[in-house]
Length: 356
Image 1 (cartoon, rainbow, N blue to C red):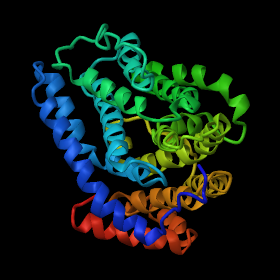
Image 2 (cartoon, helix red, strand yellow):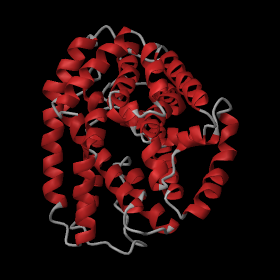
Image 3 (tube, rainbow, N blue to C red):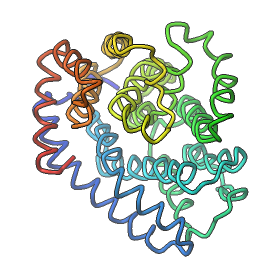
């Protein structure tokens, strides 16, 4: 996108616009999906659909920062981001919460994540191998909402391949990660290890973490508003976001859930680090490389604000002050600079108001 035509906003204005304009629109979109979810005929699917919206709204809030990317239509962007992220959260509940551990069923469900990014494909039978299926058309509506939004983008064809790569990685992660405990680790390593030849600076579990983020997809969507976008720009974004920015996103998520996941026997990629010092070292590496990668992109200040916002959002969560990980939280905040501290303070205020 031509930086001389569209000017990015400064950080203070970005925060103000994000909270005052984008948050209410996210809430409005989620309310609409909640009403549709509440009418699902199958009580189990209905419960998971509504629960995923109620418990994970902050995923849609965070992802919707890309509605403020320069040149984007914020109304259309929020509609796409909320639909795609809501679908992701709903499917996560389906593979995690209903005592189903069927690899074929999980893979079929997650075709929705890929088909939602192909505006010319007809919806598959996503529940084909899943024991419950009567959702009143909820999942298919999420898919078609995304597809219709993509049709309006002038340059989506330039980034579609890169977006689908990320969606396929995400789908593989979700399919393997939620299998029975005795088989999931071996399945994941079998899938990941051949791919590490292209990502030699990271571990298998860091690669897995990076595949779990939707931020790269949202960024590719946002840049596709540019009618002059080049295919090479989409490739640069995917390389910048995966594995570094996407990896930082999900590692921070696992970082604050470390104790909770240990107590509930949930898979946690940060738990694979041997010592607390290693956690601090690796998270700092992801921060530094993420910031470095932003300089390769158009509007580096915007992307840098995203990275800083990730630190602020996750480290302002009260779970980050758990006794075991508090020293790492303080170290990350201490090394992060004024930009993160400003965003951290803003996130703390939003949490006090229960707006985050």
